[in-house]
Image (cartoon, rainbow over all chains, first blue to last red; front, side):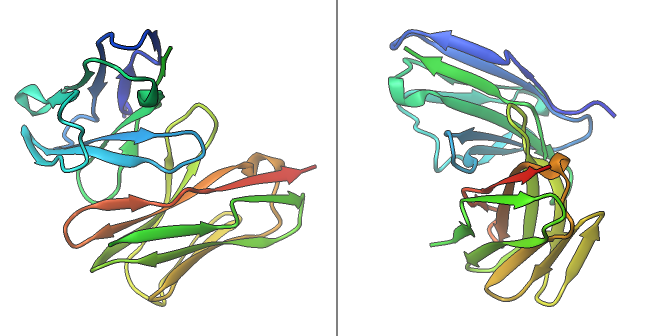
Length: 111
Length: 109
Protein backbone atom coordinates (compact mmCIF):
# COMPACT_ATOMS: atom_id res chain seq x y z
CA UNK A 1 0.00 0.00 0.00
CA UNK A 2 1.43 3.35 -1.04
CA UNK A 3 1.75 5.88 1.75
CA UNK A 4 0.91 9.57 1.82
CA UNK A 5 2.90 11.40 -0.83
CA UNK A 6 3.99 15.01 -0.45
CA UNK A 7 5.91 17.32 -2.71
CA UNK A 8 8.19 19.09 -2.78
CA UNK A 9 10.24 17.70 0.11
CA UNK A 10 12.16 20.93 0.52
CA UNK A 11 11.46 24.50 -0.50
CA UNK A 12 13.46 27.67 0.03
CA UNK A 13 11.84 30.98 -0.85
CA UNK A 14 12.27 34.64 -0.08
CA UNK A 15 9.74 36.39 2.11
CA UNK A 16 6.71 37.81 0.35
CA UNK A 17 6.91 35.08 -2.32
CA UNK A 18 4.10 32.54 -2.79
CA UNK A 19 4.55 28.81 -2.19
CA UNK A 20 2.38 25.73 -2.64
CA UNK A 21 2.53 22.24 -1.21
CA UNK A 22 0.87 19.18 -2.67
CA UNK A 23 -0.44 16.06 -0.95
CA UNK A 24 -1.73 12.77 -2.32
CA UNK A 25 -3.39 10.75 0.48
CA UNK A 26 -3.72 7.01 0.77
CA UNK A 27 -6.32 5.71 -1.65
CA UNK A 28 -9.74 5.47 -0.05
CA UNK A 29 -8.97 7.77 2.87
CA UNK A 30 -11.74 10.33 3.14
CA UNK A 31 -10.14 12.47 5.83
CA UNK A 32 -7.13 14.64 5.05
CA UNK A 33 -5.18 16.86 7.45
CA UNK A 34 -2.60 19.58 7.02
CA UNK A 35 -0.32 20.22 10.00
CA UNK A 36 2.52 22.63 10.66
CA UNK A 37 5.41 21.45 12.82
CA UNK A 38 7.95 23.90 14.16
CA UNK A 39 11.35 22.68 15.31
CA UNK A 40 11.11 20.91 18.65
CA UNK A 41 7.31 21.10 18.68
CA UNK A 42 4.47 18.76 17.97
CA UNK A 43 2.31 19.06 14.86
CA UNK A 44 -0.40 21.75 14.95
CA UNK A 45 -3.50 21.28 12.87
CA UNK A 46 -4.09 23.83 10.12
CA UNK A 47 -7.07 22.30 8.35
CA UNK A 48 -9.02 19.05 8.19
CA UNK A 49 -11.06 17.83 5.22
CA UNK A 50 -13.81 15.27 5.13
CA UNK A 51 -13.93 14.40 1.44
CA UNK A 52 -14.06 17.80 -0.28
CA UNK A 53 -15.37 19.75 2.70
CA UNK A 54 -13.11 21.69 5.05
CA UNK A 55 -14.67 20.79 8.41
CA UNK A 56 -12.07 22.38 10.70
CA UNK A 57 -10.01 25.34 9.52
CA UNK A 58 -10.10 27.31 12.76
CA UNK A 59 -6.28 27.37 13.04
CA UNK A 60 -5.62 28.30 9.41
CA UNK A 61 -4.31 31.89 9.05
CA UNK A 62 -6.78 32.81 6.38
CA UNK A 63 -5.21 36.11 5.48
CA UNK A 64 -2.28 34.34 3.81
CA UNK A 65 -3.03 30.61 3.81
CA UNK A 66 -5.47 28.78 1.58
CA UNK A 67 -6.16 25.15 0.87
CA UNK A 68 -8.24 23.09 -1.48
CA UNK A 69 -9.09 19.47 -1.98
CA UNK A 70 -10.61 19.01 -5.39
CA UNK A 71 -12.61 15.83 -6.02
CA UNK A 72 -11.91 14.73 -2.46
CA UNK A 73 -8.50 13.26 -3.25
CA UNK A 74 -5.36 15.39 -3.69
CA UNK A 75 -4.93 18.57 -1.73
CA UNK A 76 -2.90 21.74 -2.10
CA UNK A 77 -1.88 24.15 0.65
CA UNK A 78 -0.79 27.62 -0.41
CA UNK A 79 0.87 30.51 1.37
CA UNK A 80 0.83 33.97 -0.17
CA UNK A 81 2.78 35.96 0.75
CA UNK A 82 5.19 33.94 2.90
CA UNK A 83 6.67 35.42 6.06
CA UNK A 84 9.83 34.49 7.95
CA UNK A 85 7.72 32.90 10.69
CA UNK A 86 6.23 30.44 8.20
CA UNK A 87 9.47 28.46 8.15
CA UNK A 88 8.48 25.00 9.38
CA UNK A 89 7.70 21.48 8.24
CA UNK A 90 4.25 21.10 6.67
CA UNK A 91 2.83 17.64 7.18
CA UNK A 92 -0.07 16.03 5.41
CA UNK A 93 -1.90 13.08 6.92
CA UNK A 94 -4.87 10.97 5.91
CA UNK A 95 -7.15 8.54 7.71
CA UNK A 96 -10.16 6.32 7.12
CA UNK A 97 -10.83 5.85 10.83
CA UNK A 98 -9.07 7.33 13.84
CA UNK A 99 -5.56 6.27 12.88
CA UNK A 100 -3.62 8.89 10.95
CA UNK A 101 -0.97 8.12 8.36
CA UNK A 102 1.54 10.92 7.85
CA UNK A 103 3.54 11.87 4.81
CA UNK A 104 7.22 12.81 5.04
CA UNK A 105 6.48 16.52 5.11
CA UNK A 106 7.71 19.55 3.21
CA UNK A 107 10.41 21.57 4.91
CA UNK A 108 9.88 25.25 4.11
CA UNK A 109 12.59 27.82 4.69
CA UNK A 110 11.67 31.47 4.22
CA UNK A 111 14.66 33.83 3.93
CA UNK B 1 -8.82 24.09 26.59
CA UNK B 2 -7.61 20.64 25.56
CA UNK B 3 -3.91 20.20 26.19
CA UNK B 4 -1.15 17.60 26.10
CA UNK B 5 2.10 17.84 28.06
CA UNK B 6 4.95 15.41 27.61
CA UNK B 7 7.91 14.81 29.89
CA UNK B 8 10.80 14.68 29.92
CA UNK B 9 11.70 16.78 26.88
CA UNK B 10 14.79 14.68 26.32
CA UNK B 11 15.99 11.36 27.69
CA UNK B 12 19.33 9.60 27.29
CA UNK B 13 19.49 5.93 28.17
CA UNK B 14 22.15 3.32 28.06
CA UNK B 15 21.29 0.34 25.91
CA UNK B 16 19.24 -2.04 28.06
CA UNK B 17 18.26 0.64 30.59
CA UNK B 18 14.47 0.60 30.86
CA UNK B 19 12.47 3.82 31.42
CA UNK B 20 9.11 5.50 30.89
CA UNK B 21 7.87 8.54 29.00
CA UNK B 22 4.94 10.51 30.35
CA UNK B 23 2.01 12.15 28.57
CA UNK B 24 -0.38 14.20 30.72
CA UNK B 25 -3.57 15.43 29.14
CA UNK B 26 -6.69 17.45 29.71
CA UNK B 27 -9.47 16.92 27.23
CA UNK B 28 -13.15 17.78 27.08
CA UNK B 29 -14.04 14.30 25.96
CA UNK B 30 -11.53 11.62 25.01
CA UNK B 31 -12.06 9.57 21.89
CA UNK B 32 -8.53 8.21 21.90
CA UNK B 33 -4.93 8.75 22.93
CA UNK B 34 -2.25 8.08 20.35
CA UNK B 35 1.49 7.44 20.49
CA UNK B 36 3.70 8.12 17.49
CA UNK B 37 7.37 7.73 16.74
CA UNK B 38 9.10 10.38 14.63
CA UNK B 39 12.55 9.97 13.13
CA UNK B 40 14.50 13.01 11.88
CA UNK B 41 13.26 14.23 8.52
CA UNK B 42 10.22 11.96 8.55
CA UNK B 43 6.56 12.20 9.44
CA UNK B 44 5.19 10.67 12.64
CA UNK B 45 4.67 6.91 12.53
CA UNK B 46 1.74 5.40 14.39
CA UNK B 47 2.51 3.15 17.37
CA UNK B 48 -0.61 2.75 19.56
CA UNK B 49 -4.15 3.92 20.18
CA UNK B 50 -5.64 3.72 23.68
CA UNK B 51 -9.33 4.38 24.22
CA UNK B 52 -10.12 4.04 27.91
CA UNK B 53 -8.47 4.13 31.33
CA UNK B 54 -6.85 0.84 32.25
CA UNK B 55 -6.12 -0.12 28.67
CA UNK B 56 -2.64 -1.34 27.75
CA UNK B 57 -1.00 -2.05 24.38
CA UNK B 58 2.35 -3.68 23.65
CA UNK B 59 4.64 -3.86 20.66
CA UNK B 60 8.11 -5.34 20.90
CA UNK B 61 9.96 -3.35 23.60
CA UNK B 62 7.20 -0.73 23.95
CA UNK B 63 4.18 -0.79 26.22
CA UNK B 64 1.61 1.99 26.47
CA UNK B 65 -0.77 2.46 29.38
CA UNK B 66 -3.61 4.90 30.02
CA UNK B 67 -5.25 6.47 33.07
CA UNK B 68 -7.87 9.22 33.21
CA UNK B 69 -5.17 11.89 33.34
CA UNK B 70 -2.03 10.49 31.75
CA UNK B 71 -0.42 7.86 29.61
CA UNK B 72 2.94 6.20 29.91
CA UNK B 73 5.11 4.72 27.22
CA UNK B 74 7.34 2.14 28.86
CA UNK B 75 10.49 1.14 27.02
CA UNK B 76 12.01 -2.14 28.15
CA UNK B 77 15.69 -2.89 27.42
CA UNK B 78 15.93 -0.25 24.69
CA UNK B 79 18.26 -0.56 21.72
CA UNK B 80 19.97 2.25 19.76
CA UNK B 81 17.40 1.85 16.99
CA UNK B 82 14.72 2.99 19.45
CA UNK B 83 16.27 6.46 19.36
CA UNK B 84 13.64 8.88 18.03
CA UNK B 85 11.16 11.50 19.17
CA UNK B 86 8.01 10.03 20.70
CA UNK B 87 4.85 12.08 20.30
CA UNK B 88 1.59 11.77 22.21
CA UNK B 89 -1.71 13.08 20.88
CA UNK B 90 -5.33 13.11 22.05
CA UNK B 91 -8.45 13.10 19.93
CA UNK B 92 -11.47 14.78 21.50
CA UNK B 93 -15.14 14.20 20.87
CA UNK B 94 -15.06 17.17 18.47
CA UNK B 95 -12.67 15.16 16.29
CA UNK B 96 -9.78 17.51 17.02
CA UNK B 97 -6.25 16.21 17.52
CA UNK B 98 -3.90 17.85 20.01
CA UNK B 99 -0.24 16.86 20.04
CA UNK B 100 2.37 17.21 22.75
CA UNK B 101 5.84 18.56 22.06
CA UNK B 102 7.42 15.12 22.22
CA UNK B 103 10.19 13.37 24.10
CA UNK B 104 13.50 13.02 22.30
CA UNK B 105 14.95 9.63 23.22
CA UNK B 106 18.61 8.75 22.68
CA UNK B 107 19.78 5.21 23.41
CA UNK B 108 23.54 4.93 23.76
CA UNK B 109 25.24 1.64 22.78
